[in-house]
Length: 66
Image 1 (cartoon, helix red, strand yellow):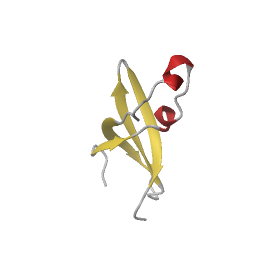
Image 2 (cartoon, one colour; image 1 turned 90 degrees about the vertical axis):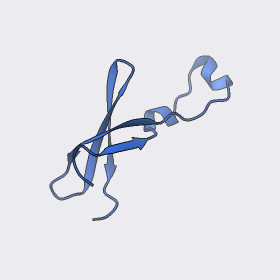
Image 3 (cartoon, helix red, strand yellow; image 1 turned 180 degrees about the vertical axis):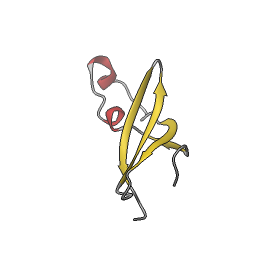
Image 4 (cartoon, helix red, strand yellow; image 1 turned 135 degrees about the horizontal axis):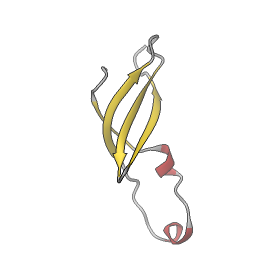
């Protein structure tokens, strides 16, 4: 795993999206594709970011192989 690597994930904000009429419709979880922008020096976690519309979202994940 390295900085700049491409990654696809389902943001946790999308997993809990329940508002108005969207809650009544059958929905599929949306995933996004972005890049790793930061890796903790002790390799405890990494941060990924992706563009969603006109916004940039970021989320941190634990390192799998420590």
